[in-house]
Length: 57
Image (tube, rainbow, N blue to C red; front, side, top):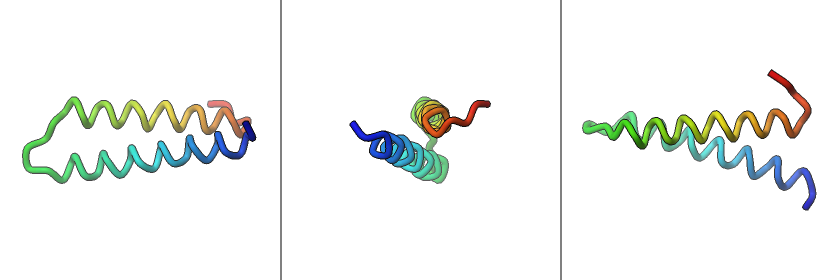
């Protein structure tokens, strides 16, 4: 599978999870498990994306 497609997939997952975090935070009744899940997905996908482009934290 071409590397660029995998990198784009990581980026899309990261963007989706950030959007979901913002939407979850705007709700009057917050589901903290959903917020924590989306934060975890954002962190993992960002880490994989950065590693795939050769950036190390």
